Amino acid sequence: MTFYTIMPLDTLMYEELYQASHEMFKKDGIPFIGERLPNGSVKVNRIISTDPNDFLSETLAPGAVINNL
Image 1 (tube, rainbow, N blue to C red):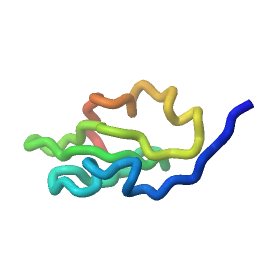
Image 2: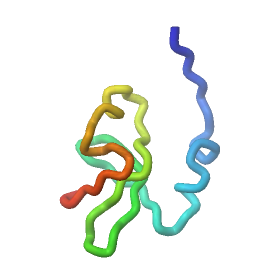
Image 3: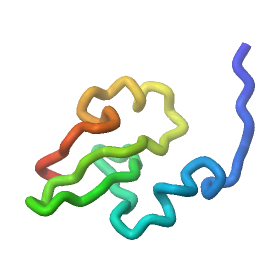
Image 4: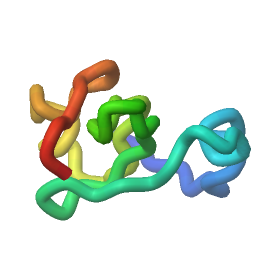
């Protein structure tokens, strides 16, 4: 059995939300926190989703670089 606990967003991602270089993006409707690189692409830091299937996407794995956003 899986239990879900509702927590405030700032307690989960305090570092990512309060650093100037990190922004919130969406790719294919999946929200994530990323860092914009100098060449215009985005590096994924953390996926923010309530759908467990979104975490299986290899294109949005933490550390992945997205060129066309």
